[in-house]
Image (tube, rainbow, N blue to C red):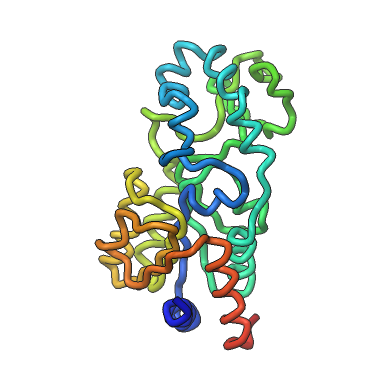
Length: 250
């Protein structure tokens, strides 16, 4: 495993445009449940809770379910070692951007600046009627939040089933995948599309793919060049230490 980490570090140090692609696995160490697996969100909540048509038909009921555990878990979470190392790598110039499938806002909380959120951000609420956006911190989520201007029920600003991905974040993610010469995949199963198509796009454009995952994913045998089977925080901490030892930029 040490040789794999050293190989990954050499790729990062020699890269001209390195990006990270993160999934639910990077936030598990922060106490956020993954969507899939034995202890996943889908084993605790019905998928209709995250369906836009159900939300539109039953907004009050949807919000009641969202407030019953899901939002509390997300909002209380704090960045872990993996989020913090990615932020440091960006600050030091080794990482250009983070492309994330996560809605937990932990990359931004950790200090990352260039973050493309493919599935939106749960810390933001939006009004479909007048377009206003609010911080979720401005509301007591014991009851469904309403727009302060028009009293319309607000919607979490993350992508529900049946909604399009945000154009700005998707287009910039595609651009980054076409430019990057190294991509670090962290904690993604590679099964949620269209986001899961991005590492393949990076590979097609000549990028080296480093994958950090506890278990093999859909990427492992298709696009991955270096597979590091470790928890995200442990692996990225080792990578950070090796970079410090080898580079004067840190």
